[in-house]
Amino acid sequence: MDAIRIRGARPLYGTIPVGGAKNAALPILCATLLSDGDSLLRNVPGLRDIDTTAALLRFLGREVRVDIPEVRVARATQPARPEAPYELVRQMRASVLVLGPLVARYGKAKVSLPGGCAIGARPVDQHLKGLEALGAKIRVEHGYVVAEAPRLRGNEISFDMPTVTGTENLMMAAALAKGRSTLVNCAREPEVEELGRVLNKMGATVEGAGTDTIIITGRDELAPFDHAIIADRIEAGTFLAAVGAAGGDVLVDGAPYDDLEPVIAKLRKAGMELEREGEGIRARRLGPIRGVNVTTAPHPGFPTDMQAQLMAMMCRCEGQSVLTETIFENRFMHVPELVRMGADIETRNNTAIVTGVPRLSGASVMATDLRASASLVIAGLVAEGETTVRRVYHLDRGYERIERKLAAVGADIERVREEPAS
Ligand code: EPU
Image (cartoon, rainbow, N blue to C red; front, side, top):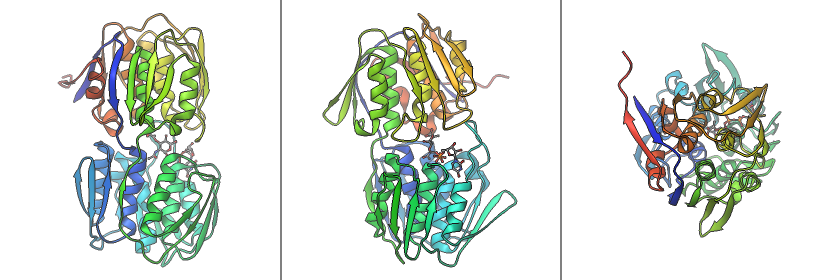
């Protein structure tokens, strides 16, 4: 199994490129199910989650050619079974994004319930409630959701809370439903807005994506599309936090400034210098980091997907930082590992109090989710001595060759193959 080995305490200088957004690419790949014909996605990141989605689309009768940064999804054959099996959903919860497209397109969908995951229970009740409002009959049997509807019909759907993939699932379903749908209390993430652009390219009329109310006029048929995916704000934010932690002066090339404003505001408050430069953001940290208080919230709040990386950066801050996680109930798995590296962090329910320490020391660490793993890499960049981050397959789900990108700006970091302990 691969691990990432880091020798820390070196500042970063140079340019890091940002890839396409994982959480935009996944729903857009699922949107290819809404039409026949050949779709082309460009600026797709080379990630394990993309391969898992490609495998799922193949299972559903598509020909998929992954040639990063492009993915082509070719003419459909009727899927033998409009089904997302447990084996694939287990690997990636976002597989639930085929539910809306399949029931809208084929009148039936059977998708394994994702179950809990490392960061929380993560139910899908809002997805199901929304599909029922569009006329689907839903039952749960043997761990699968079975949704059936000869033809979905537009309706008003009001989400109990903003849900990113829930909003996306319903947008895709409504795009093939008869008539108009109004989605209320929608997630406003840039990735939702991006899906709206794609559905419009396919021939649906989607208004308001990126706001809390989305109005969709469905069509009987949708067309294939050609689309370049937006930049990954979370990958970019991770590199900004890496510079904040390690120090230095780095151009994060392609970092989407506007999408990152909630993150930029906090990093500036912590003492970083961040400015637009060309298509990216120049990040500098010359002096010490000051403690900041952050509460995660749906967009345009501070993203939960940046909480772990910010915490790693705060381990050496002056004073204290109080980080409160409001989206997922179990998203502090990085804390005990950061503490093993010398951090002073106390957790109370969904709040972590980080008291800055003068130094971290390298250790062998591991995490059970993607962003927690990224936070350990950041901690490794500042720690004295050697850090080994294990279970790198979590990182590979969401970061394309993070070790190469960081090595190119001066980090002493490499991927190593570890023999399993006997
Ligand atoms: N929720 C429900 N019922 C539902 C749906 C959501 O109670 O039917 C709750 C969740 O349990 C959570 C909150 O609503 O407390 C928000 O969850 P959301 O549905 O927005 O999360 P998601 O769509 O499953 C996406 C991203 C996550 C990101 C969250 C929050 C994708 C593929 N995944 O998940 O990304 O953390 O939104 O922004 O877009 C990551 O990339 O590391 C990652 C975990």
